[in-house]
Every structure is written in structure tokens, then in C-alpha cells.
Image (cartoon, rainbow, N blue to C red):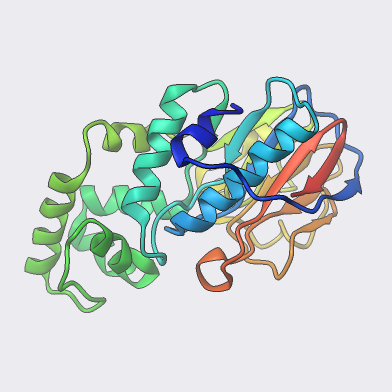
Length: 259
């Protein structure tokens, strides 16, 4: 991975301050996780630079980079974020994993059922995503005709390969007893029994109840003031689109470090 990120961005990454956090985790391979990007291109490149620097400084062999979903909506550069992540993941699918978030799911549902899904998606940040593709004049109160037109324009604006890539995004990525997912894993169910709805949208018990099966969940979706590590959860969504802070974490040597 070292070099892929740097070469695509151009220039060296900035220095970082590591904050070790010892945790009872047992990944079978080292990996990095990045929280919800939400169309924030510059912050994404900054986080990727920190990852690159950490790989080099700590001589991490063969790490995987996992994005936790929600690449679109709310921020101003969703189109650029998606195209960059698609190209990055396709360049090395084993090294770069992009999970699906509920906002990607809403965007795909809008493409399939614009009248049914459109109003909700626009309220959740779809307006900004449309604008990033040059589709202007759409607001949260768009008419049926405007929704149909916006849907057709979005189909036309997508670069080749983006739509099938989005539909194939996985819901979960695991190594050892660590499980990366966008929103949640129901603590009352085994890892393999989780529903798509819970993994994309969460469940009430997730943030209140610790797992008792020895598994850890690394997730985004729920905004926290600072990264949280507690009760079998690592929460990494620090609300980048309004705080400007995109969190990245390293999971190496049975430890979690916020980089």
C-alpha cells in the first residue's frame, strides 16, 4: 500500500502524533480503518497521508486499509471521493477494502426508485452529492419531475464502472476477532447472523451493550466527539463534514492506535 496512496495524491504526508491504546485484540493481519468521509476530499487525503507515514515509520508489512462506509453526502466532493476510492480499491483489492454505508445504499436506492427514496436521500445530504456531479437546482422539496430528471442525470454523470462497484461493496470485513462494519453488529446475535439493516443503520442496543463473545466491532455511522474504545467497540466517526476531523486508526501488534 505504501506508495499507492502517496503516488495518487502527490507529495509527502504530514507528520503525526501517535497515541497508543492497549486493547485485547487479536487480528490475524495488520490493518488501518478510516471513519466516515462524507465527501470531504482534502481530509481524506490527509488521513491517507497519516496512514502512509505510519506504515513507513513502523515498518508494517502487508497491511489492509479499510474504509468504514459513507463516502457520499453532506460534504462538497462526493463525486471525487467515490472515483478516487473506486480506483484505489480496484488497483489492489486485497489491500484496500471499501465497506458499504447507509448513504451509499440510499444513493443506489435513489437510482432504482427515485420517487420513493429521493425525498429522504435529499434530506440526508443527497443534494450535496448531486451538486458534486454538476446537477444543480435540486433541493429537499424537489418535485417528482425534478427527481426523475436528477436520477437520469446522475446515471449519466457516473464514470464507467462506478455503479456496479458500489453495488458490490461488502457490508463487513473481518480478521481474527476484529470485525469492521459501517454502523453496528447486534450484540444479541452472532457475527454471522447480522442483518443488512443493522450493519448499515445500527440498532439501539449496540452502543449500550457490550459483546460477550470475545469479538470487537470497529465502526463509523454514530458520530462521537473523539474516537471511542470501550465495551467491545471502537467508534471512529468524528463527524468530518462538520468538524473537519477524519479519524484513522491502526490495528497492529494486538493494539489500537489512533493516528
